[in-house]
Length: 263
Length: 306
Image 1 (cartoon, helix red, strand yellow):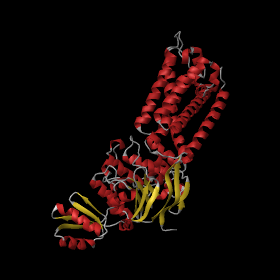
Image 2 (cartoon, rainbow over the protein chains, first blue to last red; image 1 turned 90 degrees about the vertical axis):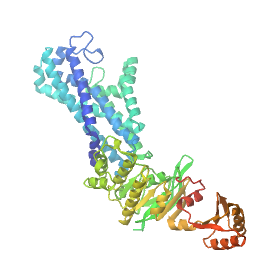
Image 3 (tube, rainbow over the protein chains, first blue to last red; image 1 turned 30 degrees about the vertical axis):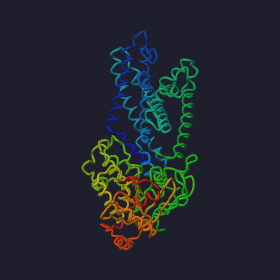
Image 4 (spheres, rainbow over the protein chains, first blue to last red; image 1 turned 180 degrees about the vertical axis):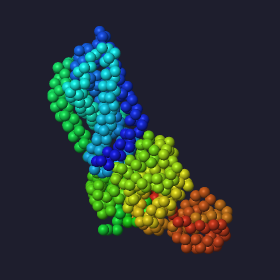
């Protein structure tokens, strides 16, 4: 597994992929953070889907990581794309057959690959956290948000939890991307179906009936990233996500292990 | 340990109602170069994929280095392979691509540069794979196959896209590898190339093995032919009659007659023709090439390549 991990990392550390993804994601997190602070007095809201995030909310110990947590969905989508592309391209390039000849234990291939892309996700989330938290501190003074509570032990604890939640959500989104990549064996199909499902289908379903949100994986992962909400508890989302991921990963792993590699 | 690098017994692969490979039986002795030939769709790549554990047989069994093909993890570290042409990551350099495979297989990365030099890519090691020509990609595939210091090398169409000089280099490389004791199992459309280097042959047609054994035995088993030219083209029909009356199948093609007969019949024919006042301007015994033999066995029209 570690051999596959280190081989995979040769592909992932390419400057165009690593730096390109970091810059894109960093830019998006900076944009989300800037919107939340700079539109704080906007009557149409400054958060996701018209949500209003007030100065008082930002001044809480959880305020420091609030903007970063709001970016969980974006980070998740980036991870979904990277995981799906890195997996499905092995089929389109025909490189999977080379890998399996050099490492016939298919579960080790899958585990090593997942571990490597998860490390990539960790770098992505860490970089985003630095951008999100750093920018929050810079912008707070500009819009008169009190930062007294941001440097307390409560704030550190909140920020750590936020980081872990966003990290979990990002890897989980990525795992869904990997599952789609293995099932569809085409990067374009895997990414488009994943992104369309999470951005459009889930939003439409929730718009039609808000209770559908309880059964949608993307909604649960976004909720975990934000540490839970009034509508959906954190523990429910975590349980649902773990069961969903375990089922999806098991089915895909069995298929990957048994399926002939004919391309 | 047996003397066979590869052996398969009743090996089959069925997709729906169609056999991609049907009850194949053949052996490849250790340390030889074995050609693997057959038209497109004959089952060559299916067989190679089964030997490499990429697809599961529907029936039968096989062994590579005396280990069952149901346990590929036990022998693949001794196998070098290039299946259905080279396949690498376009955005990585040649050297990085080999590094990925070396790391995956747990092989030393120190030999990467020497392997690239061996296949003539030493000065392009740092170029991205997507900038390589087809011939360079093919060479990289061969370098990748050599990464594990293989005991058996399985190559699917290694000379595709190479120019004549490149084909000769690969031929020499394969010979050298076989001299070093490596068994080479190579499929190719270029039968003339295989004839030059293969001591053994496995021939497939529509998923069935139609020949497996020594190349010289296959060529010796085919009927010899003599090609005859007459001084005057108008005499061709008379010579044809003489040969046919002597019981030899004959045919006129252009200004020549092709007679299915042993080389010795040439002098007899010359005497008979002379007695009828005909002068033969040339009598050439022909040894059927592998290509002609192949087309005869597979009942296909020869077009120079499969």
